[in-house]
Length: 167
Length: 421
Image (cartoon, rainbow over all chains, first blue to last red):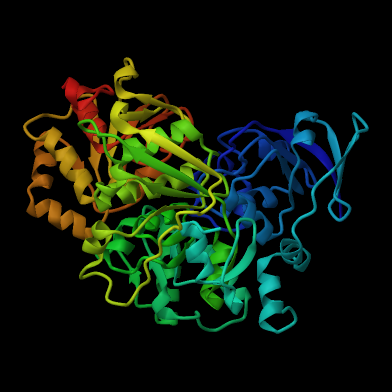
């Protein structure tokens, strides 16, 4: 599963209120939510972002609310992957559960700028910065979590489990 | 080696009967209670329907609360509530709480006796960690996790490491649970307990009321925590008496448990705390705040909307007037809190002081309704988050504080200590 896109870089503690402000929590589809993605942090984001692009964040990305609307908005906006120094735990679960790939890789964050192009191979666990030519290796997801990702998210994973296809 | 409180509760819920769990283990556990609200339930219901199951795993163990955008603030919110109401009816869920019978979920569930010590609770709301005050392992998750939990009664967890915080010393006047937790977040930072459980212990918390403990556990998430736990004691048991009518199990952390970190805090020097925009870790003693004029004071929420909080606010507002430039909004956390506050004369005190009193709702805390800020406006608020744009316009500001500072500031028109009134 190869991803290649332009980087949109933000700082530490990007919270769920700026990813999708609560005034839009009366919406629930990815398409509707995507229209307001990152609105209170980078008002022009939705107009600029292209399908396949990559968000790069600092520490504690996605902190705050449990709203799944946040990764849904990011995925709905066409973002293919989020790379950060670290993720808040509920955001981490939510992203895995809805099938939005996320990677923790501090070195990439330190050496990447907005506008760079990254190519990510999730299976191989590699990230290449096309501007600098550097390749980074990411710690693989735990096997259990990889099972959820490979099923396409928690719902398809649970359906398989309920049907007895997974132990 | 022994185990922390979080490890013991998780171990008691692990499927396939493992006796011990250790930090870092990925485990599947059974849950005692699953909760969602009017903004997280719609997505959970959509995902639940995709699973192809017809019933929730146990209607008695699913709780649905209409609290965020209620009484319905607009047509879309009304539709979300209607969807949740239909689901509750179809699934035969008795613990569905609607306007007039509801409360802010994390005030309501303990009050209704739905959470007991030793329980494992998951909720589609980040402040689900509030129930840690009762000695339960309670944590917030997203809607898809909750959909699966409603269907199967199970979730997966990574067993967290534990950060133990020991509070010693003597509390100063007007210092309560909110000040202790804000101070703690100021020390460890908004990611100081990321992926971890917090364990709050020591003589100061032993002497703290249940309301104060709920406030502290509530904000564990503001340090990135997965849970914020208290050990069940006589204060807990007194609260549970007459509320919880089923057997429950009290767990104690082992004396030789391994902690990721032990932090000792002497509270004797701690003043009432104020967290500046736009992070809860930007704390400051109230005497050092400087000149911060305010347009609004909010007293309420799942953090500070309980009876003790309203009593503190009323003590300060009694016989005083809200500053002419300030809108003071008081929101009791539940119908029961509202009624008791009414009986004690607190509501009369608020209205005589020139405050607005609202039916229970999360409302302004997350910028939903009932007190949205305009560009450039500032609020002091007893809520839990002061992120950019949290209470309204992206150029508005929220200062977090306890009910004493919020009430005093409402009178003064600027952030001050009650001692300075």
